[in-house]
Image (cartoon, rainbow, N blue to C red):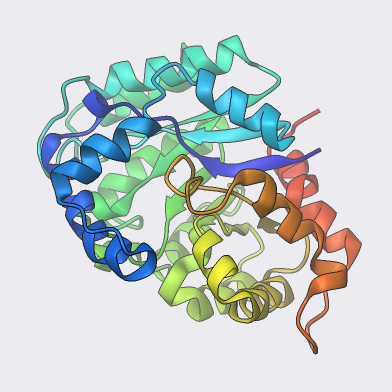
Length: 311
C-alpha cells in the first residue's frame, strides 16, 4: 500500500488574495533561475496556480490513480487570520474536506485546520471531530503562533481527547508566512506534554532538519514526513539521499513517512516519478549510502498504515 502522508486540495476562494500574491511573488526568482521563466506574480497566479484548483478533490483522486497511490492524508490550511480572511470561511473549508473524506473513505484521511488564535477555534475543531469525524489536526504555525503556545494547547487538548494525530509544519516558509514559528524545537514541549499523541513534523524540517533529526532520537511519539523535497531530490540526489539516511538513522525506520505536499510540486516532479525514485533507493542510492527494502516499504505506506490505523 502506498500512502501520501501529506498533501492538499485547494481553491482560490479558500485563501486570501494577499496570500496568493505573496507566494507568487516569492516564486518569481525561482522560476527565472531554475526554469528560465520570467513571469509576474499575477501571471503565476493566472497561468500556474489556476491549474492547481481542485475544490472537490476529484483531480487528486485521478492523480492518485495515475501514480498508484492508495490513500492520502489531505490537510486543510487556515491562512485566514494573518493576511486577511478568505472568501470561504474556515468552517466551510473543513466541512468540504470532511465531505471529501466521506465520499472516499478508503482513499482519503482529512485533517482539520483552525488557527488557534480564532475566538471560535475550539468550537470549530470539536465540530470537525464530533460531527464530521475528521481524521486529525493540521497546525500551520507560520500564520503567527508557536505550537507550544497556550492557544495551540487548547486545540491539542481536543486532539488528545479524541486521540487524533497532529501534523505541524516545520521548516522555513515563503512569504507572507513567518518561519520563526516553525522551528521544530517548539514541538519538543508538545511531544513531552502529549506523550500519547502522534506528532508529525512536516517537510522533514527543511533547513532545520538536523535539529529535528536529533529530536526524533529522543521523542518516541514524534514522526516525520518528507513531503516537499521533490526538487532537492531531483536536482541534488546525493544530498537528498544523505539527508534521508540521517533521518532514518535518528527517527528509526518506523517513524518516517513519504509525502508530496501536492498539488504544489507535481509540476516539478510527477508523483509516479517521485514514488519510483524512492522505490529504487535500495539499488540506486549513491555510493556509501544504503537503504533496505523494508525501509522503503515502511516509508511508502507501512508506517502510515500502522500510525493512522488504516486497515
